[in-house]
Length: 514
Image (cartoon, rainbow, N blue to C red; front, side, top):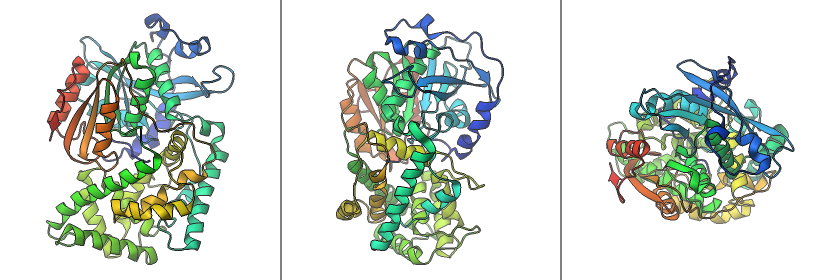
């Protein structure tokens, strides 16, 4: 399951890459930071009290009023204080207004593996509405294993280049063996380079870290906006700590009752829905690289183009050619945001003429590969979390082959590639610790779940399902394209969420926006 961080603009690539520099700038601590114990007399196990009662030492970082700190959390919550502690990166920007402060607003862009600190510093702290930023301290924490919080790493940059070019639609035994070998090498690299942390990056552990952060911030309850995978993180928190829920917005929701195989299959159908919307728009335009006929014809042309690249990659201006694997990811990358459709049309037109740089750039955006060839840790943290949270979608290549017809029914364009991509957890070096189950959060304050009707990565039925499971949830629907809805141009959506964040009043049931 890779839902990709939700952000505006399309990808805050630079933010994740600069977070290390921002967090390493040391200055004097903020001596006025409140201790959690002074504001929250809550019952916690004795072994966890040192974590809950810690003071955060804030220091300026990165300019523009940002502050950074480090939160200490136990590597293993079953044995706190007896082994290694983790150092988790936190950043905030204090409330800009002079009126009554509402506390902290924690944000997470999803992934799993997206840098929340990078998202805050590049977008949320300036992109969220001024009236929200005036009342809340905007706060982010990179979850364990992500970005600046004990990051998972698996391969060298050069090895990652090779991995991303591995054929994801094997045609025979030899290509299948090479794909399996690539997955095994990736998994071994994660175990070797990441050590014990690899077994402790589950969503449940990340949610427990969020509660430690809430206490360290001096907040009695958690106010939170989570997008994409961040909805699963937020819903997990609510289920663990229902009476500590303040105001929770879960935008682009996941359904926690689904198996890994079902999640991957549903996402495959979601990308097909998004491609259909793109194709409908494209074929009406002069010069559409997929023709000016029907959506079916456009789909056939794209499939034929992928097939051609499988044996005859397009050249680019660098050492990597554009083969079918990177071209497929390049197209998928543009499905997350309809504002990327013009870029995709241009990239497809050029690639069909033999110049693959545009699609390669879109693939690099998806993989968070910088222009210097370095990768952020998103593509390492993502499987690390997913493979712990759920049993693998497939355990053998034979299981994948058996399911390919079902995946291709969901998406003739992407089905085969995404079925094989779901094999990655089969060879993971750490056994899963979680399983699919409903989340209810009984006793929680009102929660707002947001779903977009043509969301490719978190299909709309998932939002309906989560809103039904959570005992106090209201579903807010955006009838539109792209991944997530808040801050993407719908005044109806934004007004409903802003009102909820500022007053605690959720939107009316069955509210539907365009």
